[in-house]
Image 1 (spheres, helix red, strand yellow):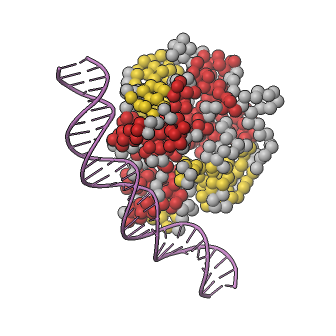
Image 2 (cartoon, protein in one colour):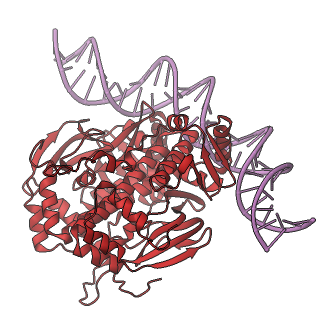
Image 3 (cartoon, each protein chain N blue to C red):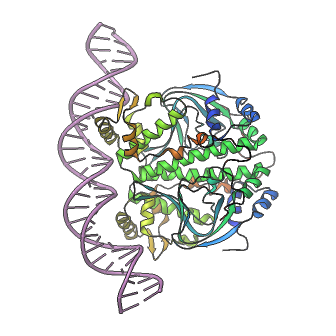
Length: 263
Length: 263
DNA sequence: CGAGGAATTGAAAGACTTCAATGACGGTGG
DNA sequence: CCACCGTCATTGAAGTCTTTCAATTCCTCG
């Protein structure tokens, strides 16, 4: 991890839809931040907190989650390096979910005040960050499909696919292999299944030689089969947005609609 | 429905966090729009479409949904009058979901171009609409808890609670009674259960005298029990945001954090 | 080497789905 | 006005998936 450039991953993420204005890059890069190391299972934000900062994840993994019915924990998102885990709190300061680390993690806290100021100065930057929250919402929708319409093995396969795709996009899953320092219980809480059942499903995937998953490290052995099991389609992640709009033709702005096909 | 003021419900919704600037109200009210009546089960936006307009719902209900595994349909959101159902397409024009009407509905289409122009001119307005998408995302998270961590009757109860609360917020569920012109299959698709099972669960709720649900109309008979069954807490809806910030004390801005408790 | 968390296993119970049939209802055409 | 039709709601029974409980084994770390 390049500690020297804490915003680099975030910036390259934000630029997948097109280059930022140089001054917007400056605004991001100039944001004050506070680096923090947190241990495993550290609760960074608690449900109900009023936040005054955003948490940019530099290294490790986070999840947001909430307790339902007294004891059952539902994980609603995973965050990987380059993600701002609680960007929502910028305009909805009360945290509806808790945010905790899965494994040791390195964070950069950015004060809301500074971020708001930057966004007030640049509507183009605000737009880019808005879009980032929309992509996160799109991931939530996909999880909804996952929990609502797939069986346990489909859910697990889908989560692994998504994680792989996201990690690849930030260069952390070369060779379809990555570290995943969380427990089967964590995975189960994301899939909405019991940890016992999660274990059995993982074993099925191992038996099928689709994945290896040992000592906190996952290796995908048969991506195509995994994708098929999961019914995975990466479009919702907008990972390849940059590829789509390659031709930077002047006079041909992206997503142009004008009054063209208005109903 | 006041056809004369199509934006009134949206405006009052947007103002629950605090009054809009007069010029921002003007910008919204001045937006061009095209009124459209659609019949039951009309697909307004299809998965994969590139949108050039947003759909403000004036009357009736919509849902967004997607097909999983060939045949199973998962509903991921309901929309009620005053909602902009596809605000996300403003900056993520490719629709990841389909949008269809549940029962006859009245829509106002607003071209992206006009909306973008308004938002470029006013960063305060952009902020308010951004927040609106964040609230929608917060609803998605709650649905995630629903599908991942509640049993069938809890899911159904929760959806009814949410719908009731949202409809009440726009004055459409006086006396805890409202029209719900969709089928048990639709409800089942939102809960991620089979329609047969949905039917049995509805009957349980009827037997417990918690709700009445006949001929497309729901009446809540025992709100407290329903809330308990659902584990419902309306905070995530931000319905009561306006109430919270009643004291408009000058010099005491809402959600002020400054450098105060910065970690 | 011991302790504690994590993973694994088996067996029984429970929740939900599927299939298949029947009943209820509203709207249509004759 | 009534028979007919299609959609939606309801029911029963069998089968599948998942949970729960309770051990047991494995691993990691101090």
